[in-house]
Image (cartoon, rainbow over all chains, first blue to last red; front, side):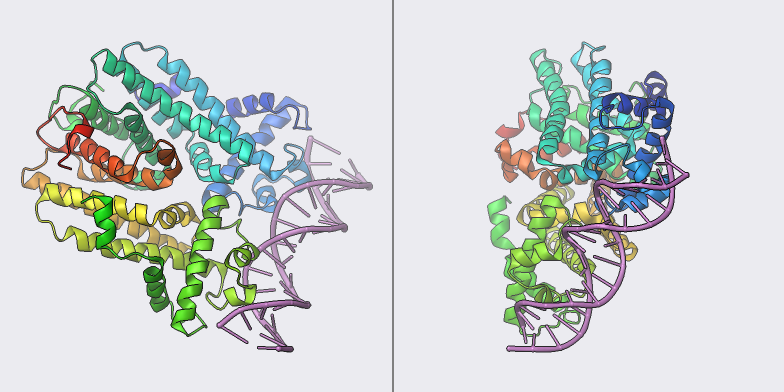
Length: 239
Length: 239
DNA sequence: GTCTATATACGGATAGAC
DNA sequence: GTCTATCCGTATATAGAC
């Protein structure tokens, strides 16, 4: 799997995301015509991500948001009942998509080594396709309400556990050498997060997501796999 | 080197940090008596870090800060001329200490493998000793002014380059296998950052900074070193 | 050096017209 | 469904007393 294939396989257009968001938030959205809602949610979400990721969600005023979306304050407030709810919608949406796609892709693989590769690639490509959402989720997590914070932590634990479980499974079956599964999963997440947190750094260096993918797979596999090939990572094409 | 030894070797008490901050900001601080300034800077810095790291610097009001420090608004404004300047002071201080300590410790080592270990450990232990500062620096970087942002990016590049240079040097001398030095340095930084960004996760799992240190050294070394020992990381005590 | 009181601007949210 | 106008709380920053 490379990024181009991933994009064809999963449908993550803005429209798709907003339609889902509408379905999940019917109660708090006063406007009822789907075509209107989807059109405006697209503007609201992308404007919020754009402004917040530049200067922080707190620092974004509703007037900023109105200017960027070309909607009035009144109109904005018919899509959410408070600024905090808008924040929660974005967080919720990112989480539920991640959960779904990750689960779908992993369950197709049974062999530990393939499962781990798939989990890593899926997470990385997902974060590439929805980079502003992932960046936002990470940076604004601490500004959530207590209840929402618990959900965010649970979601973080959930994805980490996916990696940890695969590693444990692979060790039991002898595919991987003995390493601390939790710590290994933890640093895998850290490397995945770096991609979407420092996107402009990698863009400046002209590192593509596929190059980054190959690199971290090689890095992780050299740690948990038994054999060591000693080949420069970029000459191994089977990944 | 372990964390206890590191702490003895470098002096990073709050007083030391604040005395340095006073020296660096004499012009913008209206109060002149050192003993007073140091005492109040300690309160201002620790309160700012405490409140900001919980809910963000933007969301911290000067009234919050006054309550926590037990200083009035008027008193606060005699230590900085604006909220933004307070932010810049914290960023500047963290950076200059990092630069100094990192440089001092690395130049004691000449052999690439030892240099790399020292660089990783020093950075990790430094971030442990000043965890709130590092967390703050990372999370509030995007709220800085354009000029300050450039300094932050330069500082990030600087530390990454330290790792990259050591790796390049080690490859030239044959101590390390051929890997992309820049990407390797990049993920090393990502792993180091995870420690101070997710401190509460690691605390909850009772992972000590020394355990984490051993783990990431093992991880990195299995990638760049020629020999593979296949020993569980926690049985290797020579690190 | 530190305080209280206040100037002035901007924030989120709502009411009611169209 | 969307807009304009407005309420009211809170923000940063300063002035001037002590």
